[in-house]
Length: 127
Image (cartoon, rainbow, N blue to C red; front, top):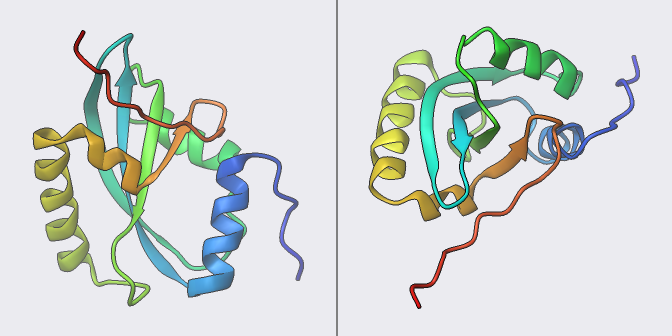
């Protein structure tokens, strides 16, 4: 069976990550991106067991959160691939705590806009 073609940066990331790691658990956080700030909205995890997931399907899942989001950041839950639900919940909780303390940690994840295109976060320097 062949995978659907990748058309967004998110799709490319899923295909590449699955090729490198096999099945894995993904942590993600929905974000509201403002002019000079990024707010955390909702978070969850998902077990990825193939490379067929595409942005269109993922965006539909994110929409079901019922919040006005403008971006999402994704992290692998661990280098071991799939992690059990209890560990995924604990790692997600820890990640959200750390992101609340330091938004620059978004740079360590895979950051995408509503169109599944890669974003970068930059620190604003005080003048």
